[in-house]
Length: 267
Image 1 (cartoon, rainbow, N blue to C red):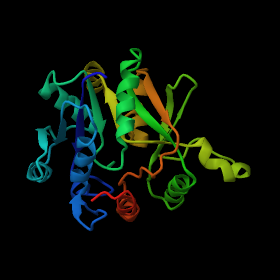
Image 2: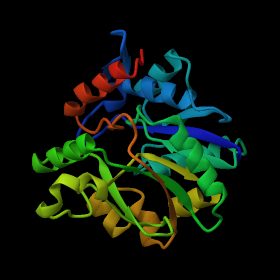
Image 3: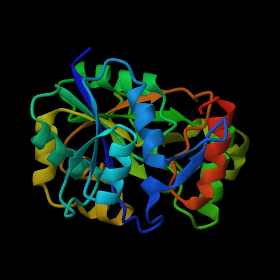
Image 4: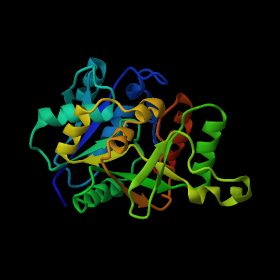
């Protein structure tokens, strides 16, 4: 296993959910912790990393992180997305790892084995600029995504990829389109993209030097800058996971995430 470190980018000013990193989430014992603390605890439980850092430009987030014992890298407000924030953090941290994992701060349900497999996949694929996971949808997760889309909310991101496990496209719409005639099996065609990436430092530097791309701006998906610049993305596919890895994209996602925390016994 290559040396890897985990960076959690976090910003306060979210258009859909202002102050999201500090949003409270109740666990299995009834204890309330902020989203950023739950994401940090998720990252800290992943074995083998050289460290976990939260990259932010907001003093409120930094103070909350330091209060629960986390490490902070302060970044400039001009970072346009989490990957740019990771690139700045990596430049400041220096040689602490060969691979850097971006575990987004709204994904506290990310399984540890997903991160471990991403690091392995990137290390074994020198032609890839970064690696990211695709999770086969369960029937319930598919319904969650479609309901969000039908009701006009931006829910999870989906991804399509080829037989060589190279990403073709990511979208905040549910892709591919599944015809009504296949509705009972629709979930089997759709893969959820989890907000976690593994990069080499040079790929992060390349990314940060590029301007935002047209599709990235339209979809609001930072990883599309890699595809539009012809920087290959390695997909690590996984079958449906025993729990739905829902991200906290909207306040309405809170009950579903808290239910999973309770089911999994996470305090």
